[in-house]
Length: 487
Image 1 (tube, rainbow, N blue to C red):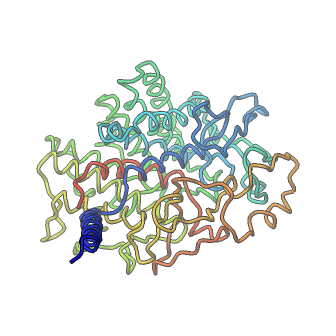
Image 2: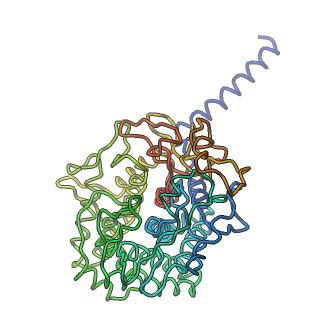
Image 3: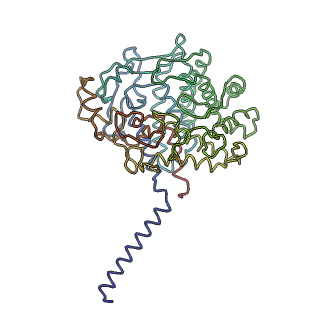
């Protein structure tokens, strides 16, 4: 063999070795960059901010918006979050977003710090709680800004919207136990987060949480003002249990535990969402049972029931699993139930592990690692391990969606005219079958249907609309996944 041929063969063998090494590396790795997904998930929440944006804004196509919210009633209500693809600020889902984001910060502080995202999560929480502090008065809470009917008749960016910024509130005469209690939960959970970071701010949040909880339980009544978009079908008992649980966690005051044991109403459920929080409270309270409080046995049993109803290999499994392996509770932002269940499975697996416990589903027992494996499988599906071979997070992974049902993302930044015609806005931007001009980085969209099929069209909102509470629940799970051994 000539020297040139030997040299050529050596080069080929060297490249083959590199290729095989890369192939082995890929096959030994999930192929999913959880840290990147975590970062982008938080960036989406920043894209949902209303008000005067900070100098470190990481979403270049977003600008200041709704800077006069509350002026009509002489109250400063600037700030907070838009819930989804519209430009209305709804109190109930906003508060749930902050509660679950705070829960992630408490449960996965070290993981978030290792990923370099802890401060961004704190900033995200504070963006919501700053708004709630302004919106809270004694026996009064401002719970909505914007007119949903008028807003949904106009497809424009929040920076140039010209629709009414109507303010709704609850008070002594118009109670709203669900929203008051959920906002109390958000403030209490956040106060626990800031306790070692900013004690004065933490105390301010806790004081407001106590006021709101007292208001919620002393003037009970269902609030329907946010219907038809955020109707509380579950009633207010879950929010009262949820809020009292967070207040006990934040204060350790026995009066909140007394309320939990003697007055609160609980129930076995199969989901966790902005409207149904029983399972979240049950999982938190189960740890106190493991620490010796036998009076909480019912809550621990209900937490187990929640787990058993969702695990596919449990004899008590209830929720539908798609052919590709995704939990599917209902159309319309189904991923909110997926990330919610993943968060609870992840946190409960930690609680069980710390206390050397298992979950019993009849004769079958499940280790904490089994729960985390299911949470991981659900998140992996969202990020790309699914029959479609595509990611359902914008800007992440293979073939991510490009037509998020979102006003700010789908209307070009060059549109600066405040007199934009609402009638023309839908034909000009909404109905265009082309990628959004602004990437809604990190948004987890509604996701595929029961048959694992996804329609990446802006007008198919059940598939393509994002929500803050989908991402807020994903943050903790993604943070934990960044630290798990690669499979």
